[in-house]
Length: 512
Image (cartoon, rainbow, N blue to C red; front, side, top):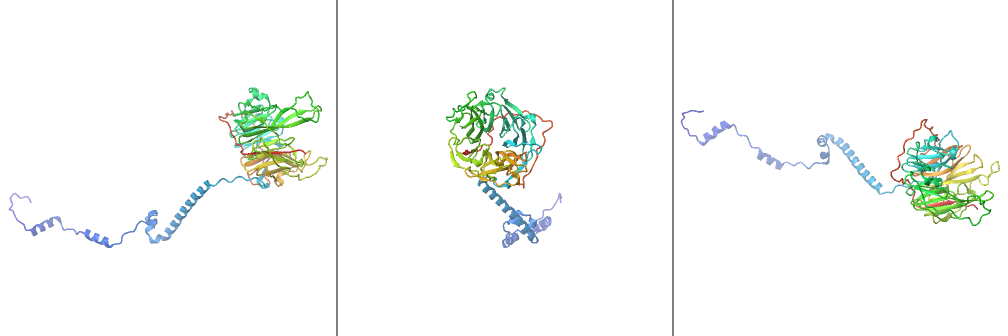
């Protein structure tokens, strides 16, 4: 109301309250005191439970979901238990040493693989490394080379990729990076099939000084020994240097027959080299030719700590021996020794001092005093020994005749320490209708590979790779029709390889 002329009016207190009430509407009740009072009389909610904290509210608060809650709770409990158990197991394994590999002491620990069912001959040399296996079959110009990545499937290397290999040919070497064929010419391959010449005697005068016969991963990279009283070393196989070697031995003090003074006398030919940690030993013979064209062969033994220089060391009592293997205890065995004439075992920590530990270590032949139809005595031969992390194996043949005979069988001995030897029982995988025999052995990681022949076919026996009845008989794949030659990448650093560690063992066959 906005009247220009009004008469002032006065109101009492009650009238004023009534007027204001009409304007503001009815007063609202104040419930706050009642709410506070009621809260004091009401029980408060407890803290969150495990289910309410980790499960959905729908599951946690509904009583009709208790069965489902129990299932979910059990599942979560199981998951937590498994997680804790896994953590405890992993932690315990970190503190436990790895279980050492076991020696292949039963026939079932071995399998036989025929490398090439369409070819004759035996395996005379093998090289085993991280990239696979090489096997040299046959001798000299008739030799063939085969490669396998797993020991089961073998492929023949094209003949135009290499020269003579193995026995009477280039030495086979496996480094961590590649394979080498070491002779007057040096070839390299990263895949075992395509090879490239990386050094030759025409360009390297040191390689012309003699002929490398045996080589090993050692010293600055690779070391080799061979003819004409010579040894070599190289960091990567591309450049070779003559090592310092002892002079040839003087004339033996006692000779049964006069010497032929026209012939070169005392020529030293080193036949093998073995490695144990930083220690190396090389062995061979010094040849003295008599006037009746017969010969006297005097054992020669060298030792080295680096492969750069060699020292002559005394030879344990024997008249000849042939092969040495380095490992936790290493050894030397008379090549093609007739075990019925006895085989002695010698041990050495460094190749310089020797301990005689056993006589007749390999026992008698299964065919004592047996002769074949031609009157030749049936014999047992030791051919090679190899050392691995679990111990040692020695291989050869028993029931050997002058010519092929069905009684011949591959024979394997095992030893955890090189002092005591046990002969492996044989079954069908170690024999064949026309005979079987082993020529060479090598360690391959924690396993062993043995090369030889079975039924006039090149074959290998491999331990630990696969359990099998009589072992697989796998033939090699044919060589590629158009092989490719790829450029080789020289190693940028020395290839240390897998060097065995520990002492050396020498097993020497002594003729009585």
